[in-house]
Amino acid sequence: MEIASLMGLAGIIELVGGLLIAFGFLTRVAAFVASGTMAVAYFMAHAPQGAIPLLNQGELAVVYCFVFLYIAAQGSGPWSVDNLIRKDRRDVLPR
Image 1 (cartoon, one colour):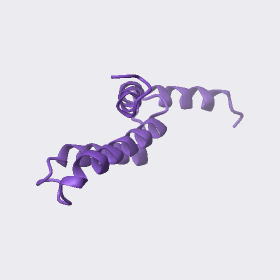
Image 2 (tube, one colour):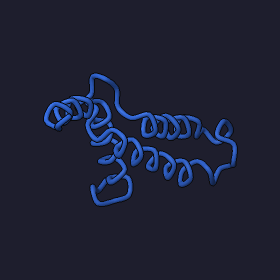
Image 3 (cartoon, helix red, strand yellow):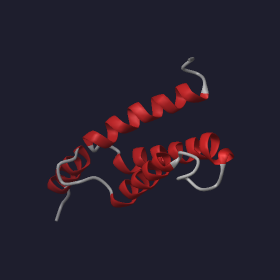
């Protein structure tokens, strides 16, 4: 498998995006990109076999797509790097 292939690019997005989401750094952007990656994976690998995810074994791709979309909408949590950066900015800004 070449890194420059479509599967290689998806692997890089999943690895880097997963780490960014796990540490809570650029969470919304990383989760949105990961959601798109899972949607592309579903439509390329599973949808040609049928429209229903339970029948074409694409249920995990759909679940991950919507979980990442939820994380993108919700944002990072209180223990994330994004939250620490946000707190630092609040300390510097004048009141």
